[in-house]
Length: 233
Image (tube, rainbow, N blue to C red; front, side, top):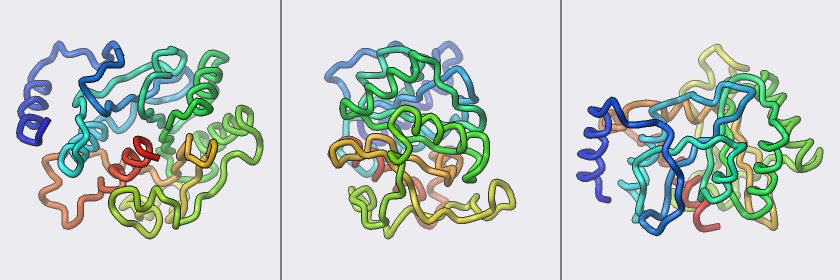
């Protein structure tokens, strides 16, 4: 799908009030990539609603991936998530997986899946950060989640970055009011399976994609790197 078709299709979707947000997920050969948001029972997973469309627009604009323009929302407890090429999980509040959620998360990551996890509090000691990190320690071990170097291949998988780009919301007086100059990850067989951000990147990319024309530099370029790494590493 090219950009012109994407814009027309998205306009049609916006005009339709009957389109379900949650779509049935069936792996097929029509797309190279679709965006899967994981819902989970304990927290507020339904954040940054415009972000997926913005990221999908960038993938169409910059890459040759065949992209499904519809965000798919899948419960983490549903084994359907095991077939997704990429998963996104975010929130502000408690992360406490049920046994089914724990099993699927572990199986997906250990089998080569990729989950991008974003802490919407943009801090390191808030509810989401503390409880998500505890979940990862429980599932994968105390030392599994580690800082990745700013020379990691994810920073050059499409655009070139010298580390995680600074966001406009990291020094806004909320969260811990710090710029986090690193990301963390759990790697399986030398490849990231869980990418973890305390930078609230989802909020940074949560704007109408048509407003990118007013930006000097498109801040969703790093989202392209994350997806391209997930698809090719």
